[in-house]
Image (cartoon, rainbow, N blue to C red; front, side, top):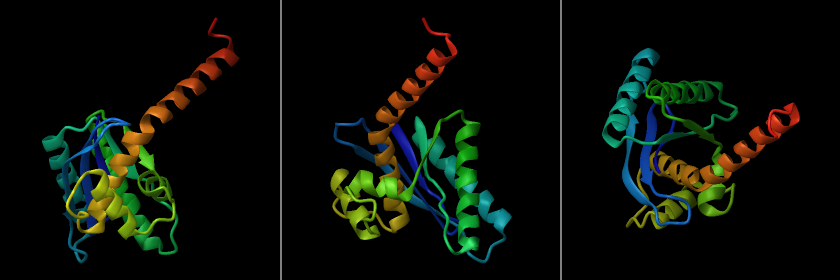
Length: 178
């Protein structure tokens, strides 16, 4: 499975591509950041993010896009910008018919470090270790994007089984399965 991880943000949108399957060594395919100027018009910034993500999708051809789920913060402006960048990533994936998976920050931290309260340095260190890199990717947004991709690769099989079980249970309750 090849996953494009996206750590959404208006100024720095982290992107990282990881390939592999659960239980096997993972391989980093690419990592980077789509940047926009903080003083640029919001519409222009979103267009630049869309163009950057489209280039990553064209170049790396992922099977799925994993995006950090926007969570509530005290700074509404930051949440809005993050949500807008996240929506652009979802749109780019949907345009290509790619599945989108949303993972919370604590879910990603727990998957790669074992603790949902890990700090940025711990996440970066574990990403480097898991992908056999000499050092954590910089900036942290890039490491976070790789962590999202890793989280999805490891959690997707279990999540798929849960969805299938729930669908089967629904069909059984409706009497459509014999």
